[in-house]
Length: 439
Image (cartoon, rainbow, N blue to C red):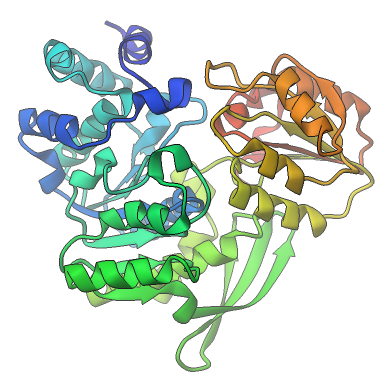
């Protein structure tokens, strides 16, 4: 097989959550453990940091990887889903896994696939761990796919577990209360391994306290370790000042991720860095500060309040659940423009009504859908949106919606694409100047 044939095989033969949803979710680690057994347990041959959470886990993973890479560590990074290229999921020092290895690994696993019957995600996790082990990374930052306790990545024994936050998402799989969702995410916390929690709620704090007591793990809460004192946007960058607790020591970090929500992610990252320093990692203040100014360029992170064009301003954000959209709406409230154009598409298994209810009624809407079976048709989204007072036309795909918005927009307008990771991934970036991708 060549690379294109390999991807076609992976997408067609293996259940893929991003396409079919819950039918692809495997509620145990049996298949992943079987794959790792065949590969002589690659997950035990490199150090790792394991990251879970409802929102922010991708940004936190990329920031940590950028810091470790800047410090001179050979750093693996596993994230999901990808936006445009499958190989985005598996990187070492920012470089995507080679096509040749994807082909070779898949061919090697082909005889075992009918026996083990892994999902797309399970095979991809095994591929990542084998690549990291073979390339002898010093450390890998590994993002969970869904949940934590039963996620395929949870075969790791990391140096540190990080949980960014708990919110309403995937309730059909993780539970219909915040306590139950937190319990699933807390499943990544291992005996004796420190755990950093980015944000806690009244419902989730007791869950994390109980879990770390049960496992004998050090518990660090980011909001009790750093206080966000100020946040100032400076073009496509932002300056975030945090105060280290206890005490009054302040430091301002310049971040190349412009999302308002990144301040809380930054506090989580800095709390994780504090733990890694205790464990002997060499991460100086200057290394951390330098890395945070170039996260996108270093790690390839995209889709987090990502600027594609300045006039009219066009931004992409992968926010897709209630908590994520709440953060987007807050930032829209801080953004000055003549008219807001909002291009939105969602998948069927989200709490769509609650998300739509948060959106500004004065915006012009362009309803569309990603090109996958799990996507909610744009016409259905339009009907649901009309019920909460949002109006706009339907477009067959994100690029036709974006073309229509650009045609209607004044230079002082603002165009936002959001609602689905997959929708953002289908934006044709070739029509935008490369210089803005990593401003």
